[in-house]
Image (cartoon, rainbow, N blue to C red):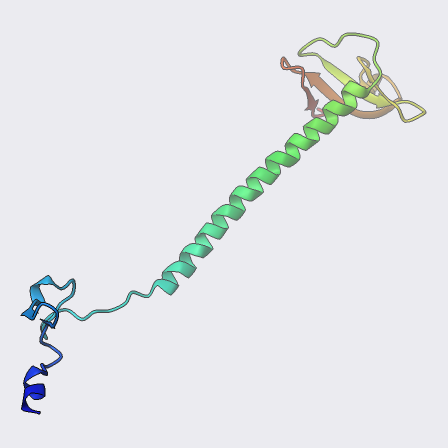
Amino acid sequence: MQEQEEDKRPDNVVFDEETNTYNPGLMPYGTNVGAPAITTPDTVTWKNVNIDKVNKQVKARFDELKAEYDALMEKFEYNNLIYSAKFNFEPIVGEIYHLYRDKKQQPFLSIIAPSQCSFDFVGSFRLSADKMWEVVEAS
């Protein structure tokens, strides 16, 4: 019984029973009473704050991409409409043309300005160098 009490050491003594040595200097943490306390960081708050920031950044980028997509789809629809419209001339790059609908609601392209006729006006467009039609705002 005396032998068991001798082998029992206090909790603050760092003893390795496998090697039968004291090894406080080899531990990755403080082993004496004066060592700094081991505390676990509060990562939950950090995670929640950063998750919120990341979600806002992703949402902002998504909104930007959605706006770009919507603008691209609008451009595609106008180009599709104009290229499927009826016209009997070769459009010149940089010139402004006007899109109208006839009595059968079929689109046609014209050089005649809306102020000079009474056709069903759809919009005015300029042919760019890359053969894309761009909307021209009414002035």
